Each structure stands twice: as C-alpha cells, then as structure tokens.
Length: 181
Image (cartoon, rainbow, N blue to C red):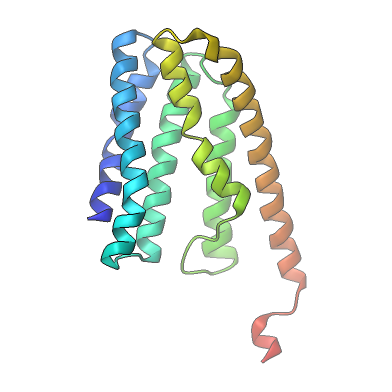
C-alpha cells in the first residue's frame, strides 16, 4: 500500500511539470491539486509502510526518487518560464546524484545514507513550487519571500553537498570497521 502511494506521486511527475511550465491560472489550479496530492501521499507512505511492516531499503529509495522527480520536474518547469533561477533545479539534481552515488557506490550501503541538512532541504524543496503556484493564483506578496527561499535553498544545498563530500573524504582516512575486528 505504501508503494502505491509513492507510485501515485511518481505518476504525477509529468502532469505536474506540464502545469508548472504554463503560466495561466487554470494550470496553476491543476498544479496545486497535483502538489497537494503529492504532499499527502508523501506524508502517508512512511507511516503506512511502518504500520504494515513493509519498510525496506528499496521502498525508501523509491520514495526519495519519487520526491526528487516530482519536485525537480516542477522546479525545472518553473525555471523554463522564469519563476526560478536555473541554478536551483541543477543544484537539487547534483545533490540527489551525489546522495545516491555516495550511498550506494562509495559507501556500499544497502540504503540511502541521509543527513540532517539534506532531510530538511528535501522537505523544503516542496515549498518553492507551491509558492509559485500561489503567486500565479494572485498571492503576489509571496514573490520576495520565494526569491529569498530559493537562494537560501541553493546555499543550503551547496553546503549539504560540501558536508557530504567532506565526510566522505574523512571516512576514507579513518580505519575501516573490518580492520578493527
């Protein structure tokens, strides 16, 4: 059931991107509906998986990937019409790629290795598309706040990537666990 909720979010990626790429009010309404459904499924899939005992590394990766694709599709689409600077979706994409590579290939983990700042960023990436939707629906006073949030997210994403890189380099110089045994 939890993976079904996550799959709903994945199925919303293309329609959300289309609605975010268009600047009209009708598309903004449809984008808002898609965003709300995505947010609800994101809030519910984890508790449902824990309640049913279906939490697994694969389902966690599916969840994170669906979140990434949903958010970045909307932000890339918004950037195509000038709502966001291109650096934001590019930074998010680079950070997600680093997250996957660091977790699976460098550290050879069976699940994604999260970080506190990365987790907060992941949650906050849902906010700029919503603010853009609200601005298109007439809540124009949000524009300066959106601009501030976007640049704060760019900065915090770059810091998060730097932390992951620094901790990866540090881990390379520490004795391995197998050497301690």
